[in-house]
Amino acid sequence: MTNTIVVTYLAYLCLSIALTVWVAQTLFKNGRVFLVEVFHGNESVADSVNHLLVVGFYLINFGYVTLALKIGYEVESARAGIEALSWKIGLVLLVLGAMHFFNLLVFSRIRHRSNFRAEPRPEAYRGFSEGA
Picture (cartoon, rainbow, N blue to C red):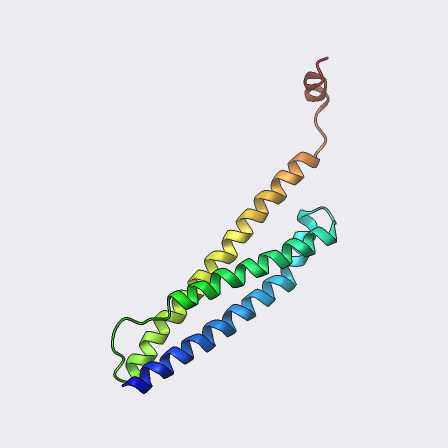
């Protein structure tokens, strides 16, 4: 019984850490292009923000994985261990997905605002705002 719970915990940690690292590396690699566009070609700012996002991503996900480690009930068989593991990994995947979509939402809004500000203002608006 004790052995089953330990194996379940170890499998949970290994899978959760591997999934988190894989997702973070994928987002880091593929998100750079998007961030360079958001920051209008300023690669140093985009790279810096990309790195900070990955650090935050790791902190939040590893924090969640650690807090969610305890199962809360006895795991008496391999079947119960696999079922507990599937719930735990499923929750980790949902958290990873939610964070990914939250980041996309934030950066799409930043991109939209920066594109809006970069657009030339109509003549009538420019004259009005300049007190003419």
